[in-house]
Length: 577
Image 1 (cartoon, rainbow, N blue to C red):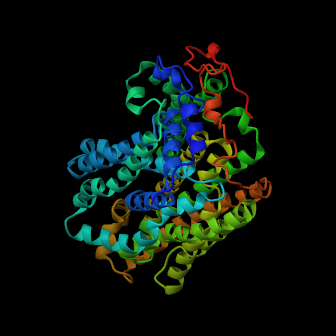
Image 2 (cartoon, rainbow, N blue to C red; image 1 turned 60 degrees about the horizontal axis):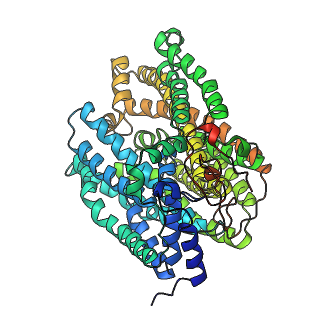
């Protein structure tokens, strides 16, 4: 039996949703974005049982999601403005279509569009998860809900390796990708059902009245214009272009002095460097919704949290970039074994998040937990320097222990929920997303440069020392297809042992880079504010929430009248509370 929604709360929401004139739905935009208000109305009519089913549905859907920190700010803005349901539709659609395109592709031109759609589906799913966790939980309880998103890793770490091996040896990779286009629709029905149930209850209670529908917003030219400014597409393009063009030369040039004198390396580097001041100028002078709100970025605590997330992502991603290949080649692990070990960090993180959630719920303080987390990550990086390859049990145990410590430490350090809690919903997800993407991009470029510049030479010298004929040609073949080489060269073979030491040396270099970078967050964490968490959804929230995104929104805010401003000079800023 569902408990009735509190009558006073119902009346308050009805009044707020219907306070604007009825002449034009687009002029009815309240102080919160329509997507946020619609989700709040649904959340107000959900009982505890509804929320349990909601979490169960998310757990089922999350089995298919890659739990990464990479998500697009554009998606976060659209989730707030148009609605969570719209993002859910995009997630499912991109997963299905992307999987079909990839599975049926026969060349790179056919594979790439499907891969991009598939990736967008994961990005949209990540943003939806973070947005829903912020919508339906307080700061004290947020990690309990996020446990639902990472819980599948506990099962995936054991089942994933066997499934990957069986599919690879059985129907092949096409079915391995394409089968999810068949599986996703029925398992997504649970989340659709929970959303529909909440929406119908909220509409029956009159809580949806006055909130523009997603369909009406999508059909409106003014709404798209407003969304354009909210997403800050110009700023995103400048920043993404700058990062890509600066990082690209690292992969192209590596450590080759000759390559760094060629136009293909110097041209993108120069353009990327020039785009950075252009991005800063745009954000300071013209952006109505800056990606990094300057008035907030002056806060020491916010800066430290984003820097810790940024640096940790560089440290762990640099060392993990070629971990799977290293496990197969240097540790002689099977496909299933390498997949399991590579997933241990995620499994440990999934288990630890529940413990950390209890600690935060009880003590309401995050600084001691963050300090412990960054220390554990640094210890894990040190273990990977020591245990980086070999056929002995001690080497394997060492790298497994390092992965466990990394997973525990990652859970205890700032995630996207922390910036979201401090800055407001979409603003926090935006900032966390940019820091994660930038860190991951730098890690990818650095690891690729190190791998390309060091490994071929070490392979050739090792094979020559072992007396292997035609060492130069064989070294390039191993560099391109290491997994094929290990199938025909068992441990103890002179060529295999030479390759083992080459991989050990390069993995050691990557691990040392990660260790050096991971030490910086320890110092930063000491200067964090010891913020005390409460029952608010975000620290900028109150009963009359004014998210930073909304406070900087191009809306007239004059009494009860709210309508779209046509230009920057029309914007009347609402000061932060």
